[in-house]
Amino acid sequence: MSDVRSAARIRVVAPAELSEGEAEAWRALRATSGAPANPFMEPEFTRAVGRVRPRSRIAVVRDGKRNGDGDGDEPVGFFPYEKGPLGRGRAIGMGVSDCQGAVLRTGLRLTAGELLRACSLSAWEFDNLEAGQDLFVPAAAEEFASPVIDIGQGYEAYEAVLRAQSPKFLRTTTAKERRLGRQAGGTRFVFDERDPGALRTLMEWKSAQYRRTGRRDRFAQEWITELVRQLAATRAPGCSGVLSVLYAADRPVAAHFGLRSRTVLSCWFPAYDPEFAKFSPGLILHLRMAEAAAAEGIGLLDLGRGAAEYKDALKTGALRVYEGSSVRPGPRAALTWLGREPARRAHSFVRNRPRLAGYAQRTLNQVGRLRER
Image (cartoon, rainbow, N blue to C red):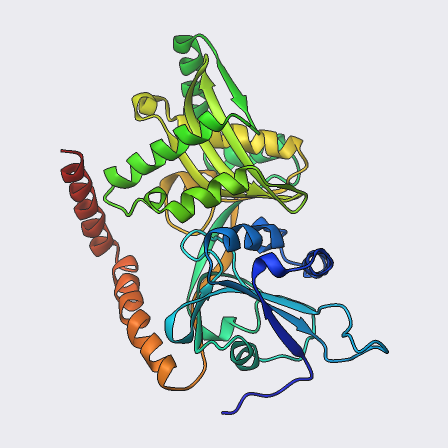
């Protein structure tokens, strides 16, 4: 089927070329979208990725109307992406970005095919497309739950929910926190730690965790390490890096780096010192993060897609995210399908069968133990 053309005009720029006026228009469009204010969807995140991923681009959409000076009206849409070989596009920061999609004016007459054509893309892949992205959701291959913690009514209300749904978990975790404090000479929690040494420690813990569990070490990739460093220094209302640290006396025992807006904390990289594993410091950290975030006026902690026991214990609900690719018909699109879809289907087959998933995880753990020898 041929693409339906709209009156929109689309200009593609590098993230560094996005003007401040355009960035403000982006923020304004996002604020009226009705979606949670996820910091991954803000221009600051795309600009940061652009500094470490040279193939990053933004399609700036205008409605096609021109004023007396020949210029268009305010932008009505923004589509950040990374462009690879053969016109194969990916969500901006794919591999680490936990919320993806375009930022468009409600009711904009635009098709996915038109947008991809303007970007010279044969396909656009995503693995954490947010709900409500009507341009791309029809192309999704799978839908997933992204667990969240609702603290909109305050931390005490959240604790009341935990007492009702996970009483043993809350009781056990707070008891471990008290025991850790007694044995270590006290605990303290810093919600927004600015010590770069603490960030280095977190990344070292996380790298060791990846290796220990047989997974690919994300921090072995320089662009991810540099992206985290840059975002740790970013301070904007819609997107700020937040490093939270739990200390036993003066020793860090658990830490988390994530991104926050005024109302959402997107949980990203949590880790802890294995020496203190018996105290469950990661769980203690998440409870204290929820408490501090509620005091800051944050209403939602997005724990991110992916199954984990700690997420099941902490969550109060879930958002929906999608994986798949939007494809323009043609030979390049076929090559994209062949390069991506068989592997995605294989992963999905294993993930949706608990016994196979268990075997896969045990194999990864064995690989991790071999790495450490």
